[in-house]
Length: 210
Ligand SMILES: C[S@@+](CC[C@H](N)C(=O)[O-])C[C@H]1O[C@@H](n2cnc3c(N)ncnc32)[C@H](O)[C@@H]1O
Image (cartoon, rainbow, N blue to C red):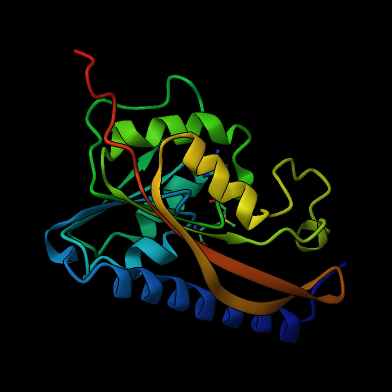
């Protein structure tokens, strides 16, 4: 069902307010960030990473789709401390040797990842001992993706399940908190969106291997 111009404008303003809230939460949690580098994984057009470009020393925007990366390159054209790359850490051979950051952040991209265990094993190679911030959806039974019949991700997360999954992979200090509640017009219906922020310490990499 086509959105009316008013519904589309409402959705856009909510998305901007959401990105503001996510970026503010990460900013507040990283007061020392002037010396840190960050990876925005699943960046889309870069709304979160670009909001944080003045906060971190350097930001890498990364996404799995070339057309999305092209959009992020365009959005980042005036940001001198931002680079953009095609990257899929959810496949077994997805970790490039030249990528090493202090902080990994992701907003609304983890529910698209088909094999989260692969991603959780990849992050210590990219950010050994670093900090992780994940803003994503609480489980919603499919309401948020009702207009996407081909969607093959998960319908949000159970917070406790996700926390335990990280801990099983050696992540420390895992904390989950309420982040953002809003609504979005989807297939003619005003649909609730509830986001959490999960913070964790990424394991220190493959210690002991040469
Ligand atoms: C809802 S958008 C969120 C974009 C942006 N982070 C934001 O806050 O607006 C989901 C993003 O996840 C990306 N994505 C899909 N599969 C992914 C995967 N396996 N790993 C990382 N990102 C993925 C999509 O290309 C898309 O850019």
